Length: 637
Image (cartoon, rainbow, N blue to C red):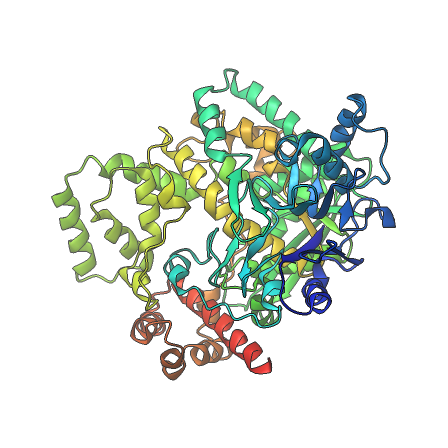
């Protein structure tokens, strides 16, 4: 795991700026740094190294291919690198390697097969930059699901790229304006989806794509080497023909192979364990592969005596004990959790507002005390129909699409304008009932992010930007649940879940790996009929079938509950309420001229006075925290 940086046609002090970019990402690569420049200095690559495979200097980067044609700066892991190495040797394409690092093996595969074909045969998480000296062409590429980040764009007419946006912002004379056009999407979802970023002319490279930039490095072309929609279409067209038992057998085989590959490292490896189906399955299969206890890590939270919260740390301990793991649990106090909030903006570099970023940071910090690599259960919900929202949307779609519009509108108005107070959840559902766009489950799912109506009015900019959810054909999948899983894997997973995990773990120099996002597991999951994934009561059926071979069913059968932060309660307590109200002072909002002060205070007052908490409150606060830190950094500059 590492960090990559670089630029083309940079006007300014090259050494100073590439080294500064590298330095901003010391946390991603504390074990070394490197710089490579082309002969005329028009292409410059930087690298920070976090040693995972081949701890020797043989793995130092940027790295040049044996034939001298290609230079690479690489962040990530190629899990099947040994198989690729064997293929190259067996075919007589290469006689040996200078190191045992996966970077060298990938680089030599690129020299033999070309970049696109090399990525097609690779399984891993990565972001890379490659320079073809012969063709004077720079390439950027990102893994299939977007586990590793990659920003790119133009700063003062120079092409730039980096693993984190903060490295680009650190360049001399960076003055790209804020991209306020994306705020409508941000305030609907709580994150800025690719290809957009918070700055104009700076983008996120989409998952599964390659960017190609030929000399003179001014007109990038982007194309895909792996298309999720094609995988979903192929899987649903050629459904798995075996029984559910046979499906569980095949899933276990694929997961076991992925986990076996992802446990390979020259440093200690452990696992996050939340006590849910996903992480418990990963931990169980890890433990079955090893002759010694797997180190597992769980975070709990100590709340005041008057609070109740579903504590999964208790269950994680029981499951780990049953499996024979070396379990590590840490309970954090409310004070510790609150103290982490001011750190969040510096981790993410742009507005990001998934509150589970707080426990993710703490569990990463705990794991880093004993390991440098940790496997997670991310992916189970999106691949095996685990989110409750899928069932809710499907049921609502099947019922309400049969009810005439005028009836639904009347019921909606009656509920919203009636004499009885509604919870925010009920109010949102009542609003959705009255909408006209019930022609697809996909549109219904999208509409859930657009309510209440004030969401669209938070930003003073009302530009409607195309994005993944709106670009996917709402009838691409005949089966509604698979449509929603496709939508989430296209945007929510890479732009929220993967961002959250990557930034929180790398902030403490921990590499997180997600075996369920193995290419073969994804392709198999979408070949399964929906009845192998969920019934009327629960999801992840075939995944549960695998887990129950290792963990008793009674240890797992409980309501689905993630690690929840009671942010709605904390924001009413004096310390955080003071912090929040300082961020949204009317004079501050007026001076910034980005958010609508009346709408922001309407939402806040409704929360304080009527206890109507909506996620957009946290979204607003995280945006304002970003603005506050941005203004501080501008004053320092």
